[in-house]
Amino acid sequence: MLLVGYCAIASSGCGSSAGGKDLLGSYTVQISTMGKSDPDVMTVSPAVDGKFLLTFAAGITTDVGTANANGLRMNLDSSKVSLDKQPANIDHSTGYQTGSVTGDGVLMGDGTCDIFLHFTPTGGAAQDYEIVGAKM
Image 1 (cartoon, rainbow, N blue to C red):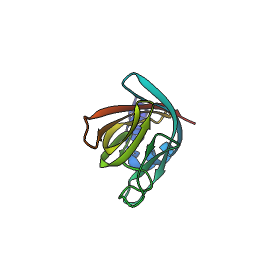
Image 2 (image 1 turned 90 degrees about the horizontal axis):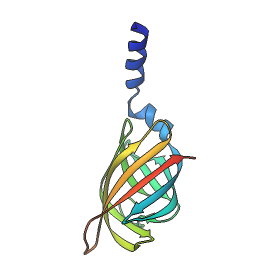
Image 3 (image 1 turned 180 degrees about the vertical axis):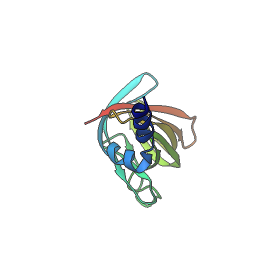
Image 4 (image 1 turned 90 degrees about the vertical axis):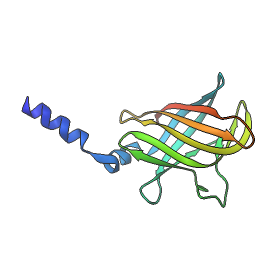
């Protein structure tokens, strides 16, 4: 029983840096909103200041010259994902929009992800995009 307790404590104490390295890489995902879903490839890579970058093969881009020019900047605490407000462009089967995005969700150790992007288009109403998938 003591050994089981020790293993549980040891595995929970890995921290974001150890867990973050295991979560790096590419994920095959579906990006869904308003009843429509588009396939994509999302890549998680390290950035500066302990943050991570989310980049997409298609569908979600950032602009050159912005603070997040290389991808969406993401915070990762254990498996919990959060994105502070930042500019983004979304080209989804529902149409192309430019605006700002925040986000939250999880990148799990089993290689799955479930992330919500809360997108506010310029001059429009907020809309949520769900990103669900698994590591390649």
